[in-house]
Image (cartoon, rainbow, N blue to C red; front, side):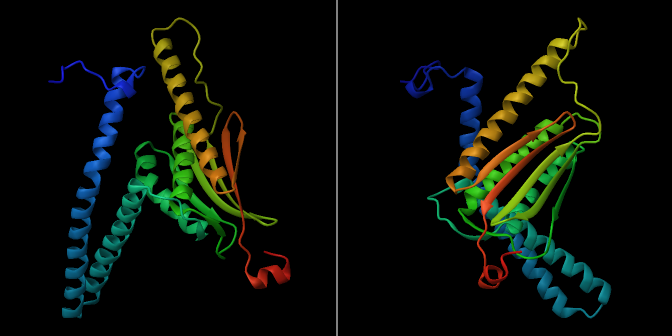
Length: 258
């Protein structure tokens, strides 16, 4: 019989709180797949009924509302499928991808959290052509999500926090810039003897550890697909610059690229 205080041998050295957190995340990952399938089924029912109702009414206002229901249900289903694929993981399979689509998916996964933190998150692009590169989709998505998480932690609590994701081009490369900015320099380090200084120091330490862990993970993931991550840090802004080799089409090779 397993005693209440028995610990797996592989968990030696991990604090109890850390072990409970790992167990919780593992359990969530297992339960999420089944729950996500049930939500996906419900979204399909909503979409199907919206389409049936649209056929049966000629009212323009009702048609517009039904189209909104259908479009939002399809958008939610697409995000859910991304999360399912992300949770499953699996063997890496590099293929041609438009990084603009990947960036849109990453932002969609984090924008609600950013809004709750009152962080303005936007996405920009230098032009409307595809930003094609060859990489594993899930690995690329995780790279971008890691950087958004790092950016959120860095900007959290700052004055007018903002995160901007911008897609650009360099010679032979596609570039994704994730910039976290605040209106005035951060003052995480506390001094003095006020009662809140210890808490401030703890928060700053935890924030720094979280940011560094996300940066390290993003660096390793990007490198696995031949990409490169550079960090440009300043008092009011930190920018993560991701570069992957661009896949040029025949017309672009002829003209020397965009």
